[in-house]
Image (cartoon, rainbow over the protein chains, first blue to last red):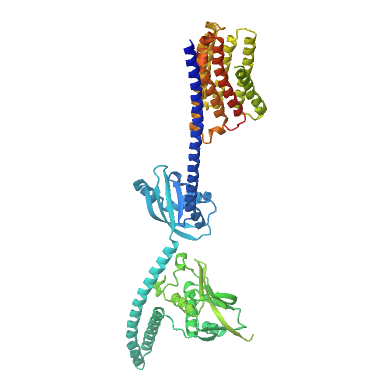
Length: 402
Length: 206
């Protein structure tokens, strides 16, 4: 019986000690696990912060979204700033609209390869600035979200376009220079021959034909001279010009077609404003502008010339701008206007919408070239079926009588 | 031995006192446990008084075991997830049915070993399961959570007294000095458990 007693005593004590040890061991293990978990959590938090900083501060735009309903999961700060958006919610509202034109291509690529690459999308920012973005992404098989990047290539595209245009212009310049040179060689003996023939024309009909031939030759020579001017650059031969005298001379030389009235509002008539420039070039330039306005008015209309002093404005060439008093000459017409797609192209050489009526596309290109030579600026505003205003701004040299 | 018995009786007062002081701040499972400690001390006093008056207190001890098990199962249920509660509830009902059956079919004035064994095993297994569950699911240190202290106390007491309850009728046949020594093991386990129960009332986090 006593053996039984001692066995019970011993076993009870052992059981009690074992349970105490088990409980203590649980507490110690738990502390170790929690410490490990905490250090892992700290590491994860740090890593998360690092990735978050990378995600938000990277130059490229990043967005994670679901294909179902194009629901945006996350969008980085860089992209929001680029699109001038305040919150991811705002981005969510416009995301589908942004990718809508390329949605079909994206869906097909995702179904085929689980990724899409270099989809070019055009996006308008809140302020209306047009951006070109390169959109690439990959589907995450685990969570069915698409992680994508948007790279702004607006500047790259602009530079590419201007480089292409420059190359085109260079090629055109070489070609036109060569053609103009050859034409000049053709026109020189023709002019000499016409001079010799002039004395031999007796009949009135002959005189009429002779005059028409002479005018055509003069037009041809003028065209060749314009081509030379654009190809080689306009010769800078500047003198002091009285603006009022120049305007008077221009209005005197310009004879508008029937039904077109010309009105000049000269705010500087009583002041003697002087500019530095080439009188012939400026005259040619303004006549060119007035002729364009005349052509824009199809039957009846009005051309208005507004001359005003512009206070202290900024003019300059080659990107250098300085505060100088300027005079603006705005030529407005109530003609057909220019199509919005053509507005930014009108100053390009050989761009014309009047090819079928003998337009060469050199007029406004010449205007731009002459203005550049005079350290001025030219601005064009046009509304289809309403009319066009071309504003030339030139620096004032000095004033007399003040 | 007398000192151990006195210390044990005093130790039973500790969780009651701690629970009373902190009762307003106690959570629902802690409150259930507090009422269990109150019932324990009441039963103990009755048992002690009966033994002092040389009256057979085995019926009270049997009742104490049933009430104790029911209270602790209620405590486990309040700590568990709703999905586990129905199992604990079912177990409690089965145990109650079994106890009623056993008490009516056997002599109530004798220590019922069957009820003691089932009760101890139930309490011990549920305590270990819950302790393990807390250990597995805990995202913070378990020492800072009151269920750890309560369950530790229950496990230590159950382990220490398991064999004593299992062989209670045989122990009663031993000489008094052996009987006293045997019960002192139970009292030591009770002191340890009561200290842990008292600590648990001062910890709030689940």
